[in-house]
Image 1 (spheres, helix red, strand yellow):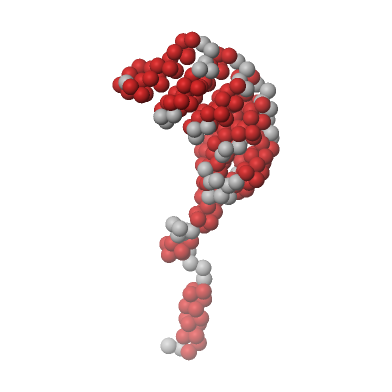
Image 2 (image 1 turned 90 degrees about the horizontal axis):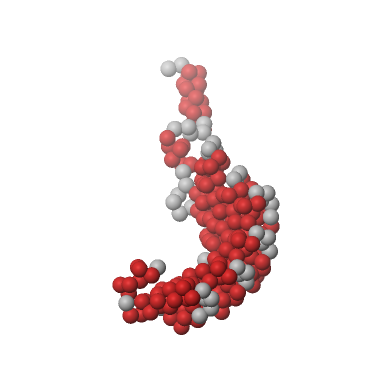
Length: 251
């Protein structure tokens, strides 16, 4: 072989060896390790941004935001909200972030900062029903996190009477689920519709009875003004204790 040809061939092979891989091996090298969370987050973010269907893209960003919040990355979670087109999905994302973060036991100062930011983001939603729903979800998340004063303030700021009362009732349910009778009653007292208030007391009484907290259940039931609703709540409390087979007839 001519010496010059040999040199050229050697140089060509060297150049090929230095070129970026475009084969399946290259794709394999670019994949994330299953335990590499930052890599996985980057990968899924890039994929979601390329989804053409608006609803699917919005829903995917919502789920990603919830994972960020659960992973103690609330700033990244909140930053995704502005990428979502649907006001309703924005509201659901606010709920998801708040509820996921509430499970992390962050501490009062961190929760206050988080819910203040979520409220600021909610205030940018220009669709009235979705905005009201977002505030309801913030109040629920605050109650879930144990920030009862914050939940009361959020609910009280809502202009729509029905949704405001719903926010109080939802907060009371969460407070009952954690066994806090006093907080649940305070939330229900704020409801300004007697029928809605009785319904909330009955549901809270049921929650306490289901958890075996019968004294709390009775206390809630005695706050019910409607005699039928009161009797049904008391019957359920008794059935839980002495006739479990009757429960399905009373629920």
